[in-house]
Length: 631
Image 1 (cartoon, rainbow, N blue to C red):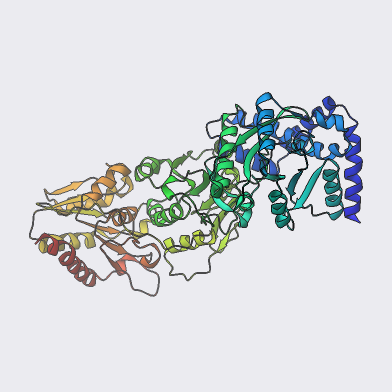
Image 2: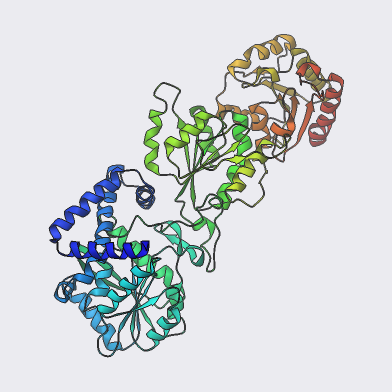
């Protein structure tokens, strides 16, 4: 009953609209476009996202202007579909303009007598070509068209009958492919909409520098046959009136999907406004972008170009943690995402103090610093919405980070729920791992929920010193985020003396840390009073600290950002763990490391450390990593 009502409504609306003057209809489409662009909706976001990705050089006001024009053309397309069954034959004659060059090309195609495959893109007036009496092979040959059936059988029957009335032979995409090939073999012409999203049945290939699923139906139709393929574009020149543009395709019939999309892409790029009458609001690039597969690019059938040749246009944003150690533990997961999705433009958000250092690592295409905390903090995030990210992965576990993600406006927002409900995320992942799972592997599970399937790359950036006339030892006694991790002075003094007694080579010792660690570093300096000590605590930026660590032969430290930085750089690390567990926050990269930890089953305190056992571990580690290498 509902289907019949929809048919009656469509017929009545089409009849009414066909009686109105074109000038009034155009005003109505502009009004509907204004409403469409004013009220937030998923289709509006898709339209803005497509334009933003395709033309990153455009200013946002231009994106909005073209989006509004494209919206009006979308309504015009719908109006024409409803009106043309009621338009006179003389009215249909004036819907398409043919210049001399186009008429000559059409006449040449008619004279060859060969079947012609007309590849038509989704411009707003593409149906004017099918309804125009001049867009025909003439003689005893006919124009056919492959169409996608409507879900409403009554509407589908009405639309099919309307197409037959204007001289088109329709073939259903579901059932009529064999009949369509037979139609071509008889020398007829066949029209196909070639730029639709082909979903799981298409082949992935770049279009406008962004991968999409292309239909290989045109390839099938011309296979093993003498069919001439051409691209026919109905370019709008005024309301309900278009101009036919014909572009011939080369002989690479096995790559027809690439050739046809290449012609359309050039046509769009050469248009001053990006061809707004093309249907920008359809999901052309909805490929591998569902939440469970968005982090894995799956090549299908004909495959993709090499990874290094893929344009990076899919916008994936990562909100990294606020502490240096956590950021470094997230790097293997970031590597995994870049490897699994080579077509993504990876953007990471961090505190401003980490921006310069992360840019130097080159782990992402864009590194952005968050604004400083202030009453206007969240308002300063609003300009980021214009970038239209598709996916945001949150390595943070805070309400503030979740609210940031809402403001950024990513379609999918994913993070791990560590007990509390994260209702601002539309795709939270529950933590169902054991308490002893390392933080990096917890985040790996988050990436796996987005589609990643490969293992982590835990190879360090190996830059530690190998040849030197002296041994350089670093000591990082502090811990910026958790003061309870700090080891007492007497333990550091014992370990330093052990190092001095065990290594029969010239030694330089450098104290490293933030200004908050100055008190314990000053105490170590006062206790030791050695000329070969250098106190750099609070005197280095993060980049300078990184350079210092790369020059070390060994780092003695507590659970801190310096420990993770040294491990990432491949510097041997001897780390002391108190209240935290190395199973969860220990150094993760495959570099030399030794861990001394509290083994108490109760609350873990650094005061419970066994100095004798720790000294034995350090002595063994020195023999393995320092003395053996220096022989």
